[in-house]
Structure formats: structure tokens, C-alpha cells
Image 1 (cartoon, rainbow, N blue to C red):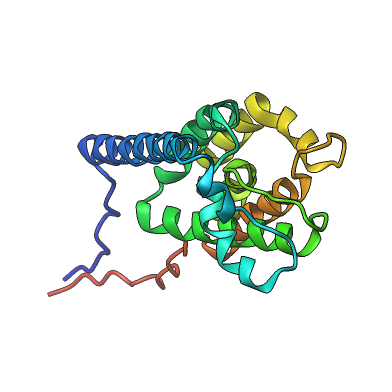
Image 2 (image 1 turned 180 degrees about the vertical axis):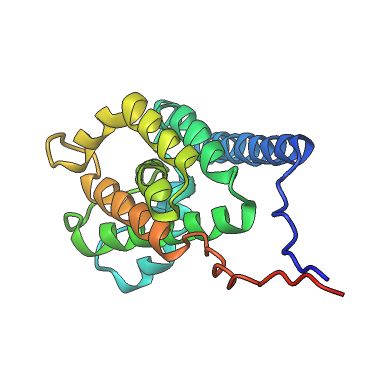
Length: 211
């Protein structure tokens, strides 16, 4: 008799299309939410700006999450919308559960970086920390997971959006380089923490022939 392992299952093209459609829907909904929140903020006389992060104020620690969804004007949210849509879509293709965990880590890490290191009495909000985090995540994910297609995606992301790396330097007044820097580090950390687990290679099973 003979024993053999079953062939590994590959995802069907239809499953890939479903993942892409789901990722696109999630990111369009997310970006739409940012615009809706900014409309509400403007209509309320910028009442939502109070949920930005004020550094080293204990009560402001809760604002590290909502601050990532708020902006200071339509120009601000417009600047973040396209890169968030593109990078978020590419990251969400690997699965929404993993994507949600990655974004949560980036939001918290970036927000804490602002809370600890931003100038006193400043107010910080915006999705740019998440943008930098997703950039860092996509940049290293393929190397961590050892997946050639994700390495290629990382190279393309670097080629298209690599210039944003200047944003981690304190060169522009009024720009939270702290949120950018810690978002980037959070994205790299997320790629390591939430790396795809590779199944153990099964031991070879001998094949027997005979009666």
C-alpha cells in the first residue's frame, strides 16, 4: 500500500476577487467616514477637535484612538485620503482580522508616541500616523513572511510613496513628525508581531509497496 500527503490547497481566483472587493469596500468606507467626521466637525464649530491628543495630560490618553480619525480641515483629510485608501487596500488583502490587528497596533503606537514626545500644549490629530504605519508594514511584510509577491508589493510601495519618509524628520512646523515616526515604527513592529505563521514542514512519510 502507499501513503502520500495531500497536495496543498490554493485559493481560487474567485476567493481572491472576494478578498479584493472586501478590502476595497472597507477602505472606501473608512475614508468616507473620515470625510463625514470632518463635515460634522466643521458644522459643529470644530467641536471634535477636542478629541485630538494633548501631550502628557493623563486624560488625553483615551484620545489616541479617536485622534487617528479626525482632521483639522478638509485639506488635511484630503492629503491623507488617497495614500490611506491605497496602502490600506494593499494591507487588507491579506485578511481583515490581521489587518484590524495591524491598524490597532499602529494607531496606539503612533498615538502614544505623540502623547509622550510632542511639544507641550500642542494638539495632534489625523490619519497620517496610520498612513506611515501601513507604509512601514507593507515595506517589510514580505521579508518577514518570506512571500515574494509581498516583497514585490513592498518595493512598489517604496517606489511610489518613498518620499513620505522625509515626514519622520522635524523639518516642517506644525507637522507631527512624532506621529509619523512612531506610526512607521508601529507598522514595522506590526509586520513582525502579526507575521503569517508558517506551518511546520511535515516529516517525510515513507511509501510502502507490497501485498
